[in-house]
Length: 384
Ligand SMILES: NC(=O)c1ccc[n+]([C@@H]2O[C@H](COP(=O)([O-])OP(=O)(O)OC[C@H]3O[C@@H](n4cnc5c(N)ncnc54)[C@H](O)[C@@H]3O)[C@@H](O)[C@H]2O)c1
Ligand SMILES: [Zn+2]
Ligand SMILES: [Zn+2]
Image 1 (spheres, helix red, strand yellow):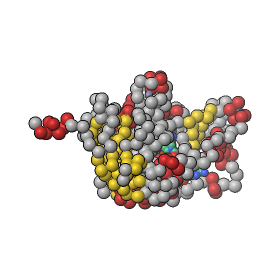
Image 2 (cartoon, rainbow, N blue to C red):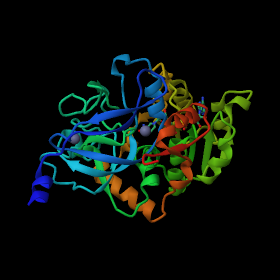
Image 3 (tube, helix red, strand yellow):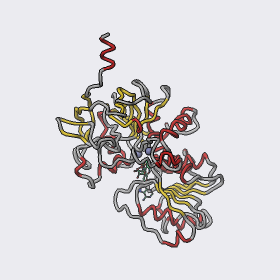
Image 4 (tube, rainbow, N blue to C red):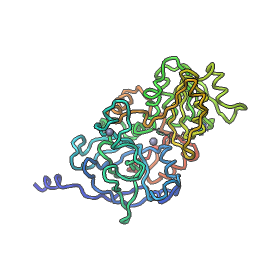
């Protein structure tokens, strides 16, 4: 009887370790934070693994929203459901989940359109709070701590909306599948859903981080015949080959603009170009590198500065298309399970993108490695 009473009583607040950013670019500080119980339609997740995405680093360094500190970053994560809020029927305690930075409510105009993953209710959250009540679920010494993308996985426990989590099988390795929660899926989806790369085509990818290498993998699986990787870091040449890159260009080693070299290599311009750097100048270069008539440029990067894109009007008049995507156009609940199955069936590579396994206590090392361009994905092991 006592056990029954305990299991039906509402979950209480939890105190746990979280890596808190107190200001833009300031090293994260391990703090004891209080994590509120999940609200209606929310779940509280014990984070098992979280990998560090360039978007975390860009947002952590950005001085654009100084009021959103202290803040807990992290959005590429796997975990176990610890408790569920009122009204949640999809998840049970013990389920394994991936968190997602854009959710799927399955009922708004975009979710039912079948054409978009820009959910109107659970879309990209920019104010550092929960979608439902614009409040935070974290506090440190009584002071609210802001969220990031309504995920905040740099904490041993976090609260997410049930629409921002996707169930995964109990046998997929949690410390690798977390990469499908953002970077790998974003790249594969850009190639498959957004550009719809065709067999025998030519592709150019600017930036060979986890996102760009995943675009390369997606293009290779579609049978692209030429996949040109462009990166200012010469070490990306070897890594690129493993993911399907057939030709490598370091723009710093050229005596002419990179788009001219690409035009020569592709008889006038690539069929598809992808921006995976986070630099709007590179978006213009990518557009200049694709073909008249049918060339498609897909931009994925999150710019650190200068969000405006400039492009000569003539590129559009001559039939080129510029488009962008978040999370590769995938609708997380509808589409992510099939990607997880592809990983389990070894149809897509994920493990080769993990360059470092790091205990939670050393999380600042992962941020430093990314700033120094010495890693692809660092996986943070929360229990270490
Ligand atoms: N749209 C989405 O859904 C989505 C998802 C995840 C990440 N992102 C964004 O995508 C971008 C890439 O993410 P990542 O995690 O792979 O980052 P990353 O930092 O690991 O990779 C970026 C790569 O670009 C290279 N680079 C830097 N400047 C360059 C230049 N001028 N020309 C060519 N190469 C250059 C770097 O050497 C590096 O290899 C970031 O802006 C990130 O915020 C977007
Ligand atoms: Zn929706
Ligand atoms: Zn990300």
